[in-house]
Length: 324
Image (cartoon, rainbow, N blue to C red):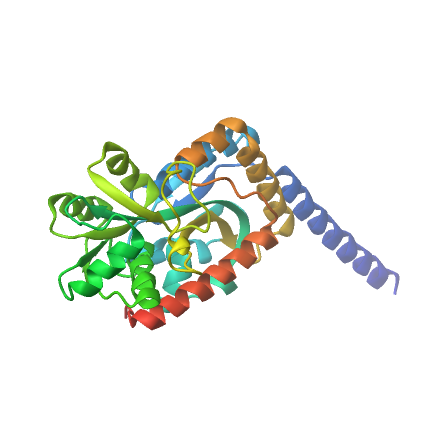
């Protein structure tokens, strides 16, 4: 009887020790480098933003946040690799618009993003810019709508690829205005912009960081930004919602981790990210990249993810686009 009691006590002590070790590891986190998976090649807007925030997290937490670029399958390869990783805080995901769009765009995904990824923190929102080449006579959104309707089948909508936020922002515009255009997908924003400059296509709803220099140089003309408020980078450019009430399309960025990652680790990452976003130098750089920092708890980012997923699902269904 005594030996049985002793055994039970030892088991209880062992369980208690394991629990305390788990708590300690969460408090000490990170004790080794963290892999930050980005679903796009180096040099793009997502990669730039990840490296900007990752550098400061490395400095604040004393361990490297190593950017791992895993392009392919419209961001799904990167996302699935994080979902299948150990939920220990040492593999994190750069969350971007493809995660919200792909939930309804792809018919055979092996994961459910909202279920399988735990939100950590939002970074910022970046508007797209409705931009035309200088041969297009329209100077306003209303004039452009009239121009498209007066020239059926003659106006080409460029995008950085099927199912991207650039493509679906244009589809949302067509659905809400009845102005039908021919969609021309490219392999990325750079070749799309090249053809826009050359006059082969007439309009693009591109991410602000990649189109801004051409607008400022006067080689392309911005008609509207797709956010609900004007951008400080293009203060004289109206919002699309000024002409098309209720229109909103923006790129929401943040960090996620595999589900079942300890709450203490998520809270620690959220606290550190929010501290980084509040730094004046980082805030200024985020604004230069197109959007003010979004500081808040994990739950707020989770609610944004759900709202974005529902919004883009309506656009995907309305446009009738899908990827097998």
